[in-house]
Length: 421
Image (cartoon, rainbow, N blue to C red; front, side, top):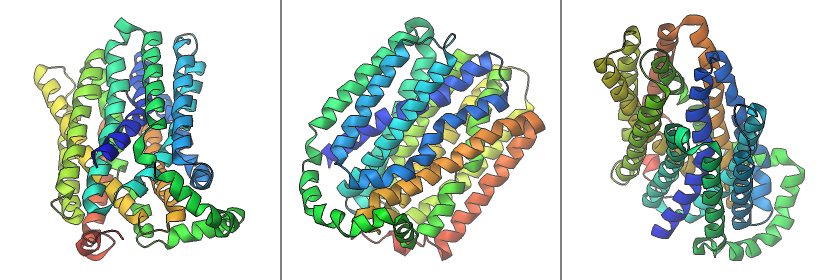
């Protein structure tokens, strides 16, 4: 089991690096250069490959092995970082945007392969909880490493040296995956599946609507689709806009890089880790009920801080506390969510599991991406206080949706206590 966790954690770590670069560094860089919140929000278009990944997920399912896909995409990320090291963001802003778009594209394909590997490697509720903890913690650690770390030391190390470091990180991980023993059984399973791939699955490839029908027929999929589209809406608006409020009134970019990019994300990792431990002891339904209510309460507290515009040590401390609590609960919720998604996917046929999970993960990203892109415009039009009231309303609505499902819907506790077959 430890080999599986190290393997998954390392792959999700390097997968989180592009997100950290774009979510933590780019908004602060653009805001410092005087760009509007609306324009900053529209930079989320660089995440668009994550929305499209469900279109090429069947290819990853049917062509080649997970090892080859992983080595190819991680090697591509190393090459992209090498190219980025030769660019200066002040003079080549479109070139930097292009490399970030390429990194998101490669990371999205890598995500399909590693998710498919995880679905096959993790067995039983205990392994699911720990495996999804490795997923979320690894991803967020990569985000902190690239976003918080880069923002804090870029003035000292410089852009080129930071991307050279990332080049070596990706190259090392590619070599690790090439020789990883946890995937040794994959070639055997692939050979056994060749006949079915050439037969029944080939018909599905010609008629893709059959695959979509199979995806939607998996038990629990309909509820999970709605949930992953909406569960982060209010939180995502607050997470995106509150740091920019602090940048406008209370913190410098360097302070924000440390407190939001490192400390608050550290709390997020702690929350994700705790989620895996709690899942081994309690049902996911009871955990989700309580955590979603706590998240709504934390957003009430954070929204109240928007009335304070005068800088002070007390306000700065309360803001750090608010971000830390919000990220801690957000990390815990993310682990619970990805465990729910994987549990749903394990009910699908093995031939469509990677596609099914990628479908759910795509919608999860789509929900966050669309709202993040619109949140800046809402703040520009209506102001921080009105926008955060809307974010709070969305968060409360999601909490009610989850609470209801744990008693009468897809999250009935006895369903998620069952061991996957």
